[in-house]
Image (tube, rainbow, N blue to C red):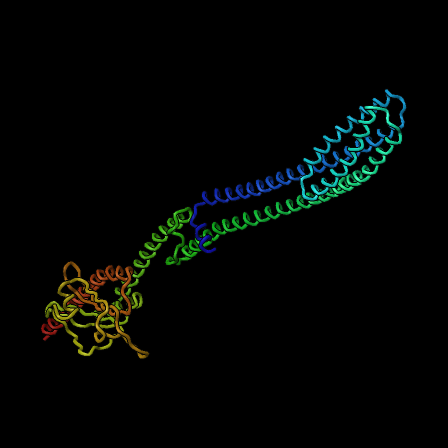
Length: 454
């Protein structure tokens, strides 16, 4: 089910709508065609059975009627004395005999079941037993005027077999009527079954379409809610939120990728805002420094929390002596072989001063440097040394140790703050020189005034 849902989410809205409409139409066509086929088939079966049963009942009625009329004609012929009337009755008997033969053939063609064939054997025997005295009666009267006693015997023989044949016809009529009732009941049951089946198919189709529709709605609603939630998170300033569905090649994917572009722009703007804000903060702190030591302390104290520095050291460059002297530190712990001075090219600090390029070492040796406190200590993950240069003039070198690598924003902050630090160092250096010059001038003035007074 989860795979099906993911597949539906990946489809475009056009495909979803067309797929849902196609499923609905196909389901309705299947239900309609199944119902039509079942009802048509049922109708043909019922029509065939009813037509056969009705034809059989009509033939049996007609046969029974003709058989009764044949017996009545025999009695009438036996009672009539007028030769013309008798001749007319004999012709009528011949016609009825031929009709009975045709109806008998029709009955044989309609009754095909095993039970019907067994009845046909019995009825055929009784029918032949009736037809034989009837033929003899007609033949005898056609040739000569027999005595009434002889014709009476033939009528008696006919009546005896007529009762058997009539009883068989009555039984078959009742059987066919019963079959008709049973067929009608079966047809009614089959119709009810067909209606129930159609209702079940309709319910199943409704459930299927509703289920598919629910999945379609959820495949649209859930991505929409997740993308809306991501937008709300971005609006709240949570720029690191993961925008979903960026790898989908549909409307949701296009919308998510557009939001991802906005997220990237927002991250860049936030990074620039963060960078400029902290640049201004650090610059303001540096402007408050009264001396180099205070400058180093303010710089490291303000910068270290921003980039999660574990330890840091600030080295100022002495141009006259051409070496670097440690001026201050942050959470600094003296190393095993502590050296407060570095010549150009000596160690990482001296090498950075010589090359005037940042040196960053990831994963230093275990015994190189540990960042610690009263609660514990751990190996430094990154050691970075940055030169402080202004117009190719080296002013200082700053060394950092952290538990993690610098992020892109932190590297940009370090790169942008070093020129500000260099400018502040030069301003402070000029201020110190100016102050020294004023003090020297004052001393000279005081010395000259003292000599003149003497």
